[in-house]
Amino acid sequence: MSVWADLEESLSSCTENPSGELALLTEAVTGLEPERFRLLRLRGDLPELTSQQTDRLAALIQRRRSGIPVQYLVGRADFYGRSFSVREGVLIPRFDTEILIDTALKHLRDGDSILDLCAGSGCIGFTLGAELHLSVTSVEKFDAAFSVLCENRDRICPSARLIQGDVLSDPVDGVYDMILSNPPYIPTSDLSTLSAEVQKEPVTALDGGDDGLDFYRIILRRYAANLRDGGFMLFECGIGQASAIAELFREAGYDAPFTVRDYGGVERVVGAQRSKEIS
Ligand code: GLN
Image (cartoon, rainbow, N blue to C red; front, side):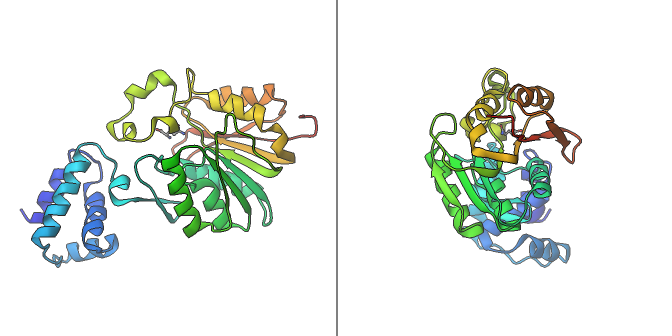
């Protein structure tokens, strides 16, 4: 077997996409872009690795095999066609969240203002701010995530305003056309059942309390005054949570909450439009 087949084989025990991950890890070591890697590999034309590169690649593969997500190893994750910086301490942007972007884009216009709560890498607010001309405010509590948020803001949405603060207790000023959040939503007792990769992500970005719904309850209560009449509140949620969150919306005075399925058929977004009656 060639050295590349050996390396791919050693990744196959920890990922369903060993060839794609090998391309990403090779890029981190050699700078060779994944598309080019694939092409040269098909042609049997890949350049020889130096022994130093071979050692670095082997070390990365070893770390990958210990359960560290490939995105942390290469320092980036793709989301909605853009590359976001990530590292340990920040939730990795997920494909599941792209439906939240699609839903938000249906209700936004150039010039609107948005507030992204529990922003993490910033992928929600900054993607929207890069797709349209928006005034973006992103709130994140934790230092490690906040420093990643700053980096992504500078590259992807330089006009965004960042606030380091606790969504659950710090005041946020302003009235917005849309409030969005992908808050922590895993029930505490489920945390230990998550995959090794997800357990390498910050528990603070995952733990949504006893039933996983703590953040929805509090955000719906605390931010009512930060949403303009006619504005939209949109959340991502976990599998099986949408109807309970729709009920929380109704209790908070929103009359027509709606849900949107993601591309895997899961009810992934819950939202509602604010009407005048909500105080
Ligand atoms: N989508 C993440 C997962 O499946 C959870 C992210 C969150 O809690 N917001 O692990």
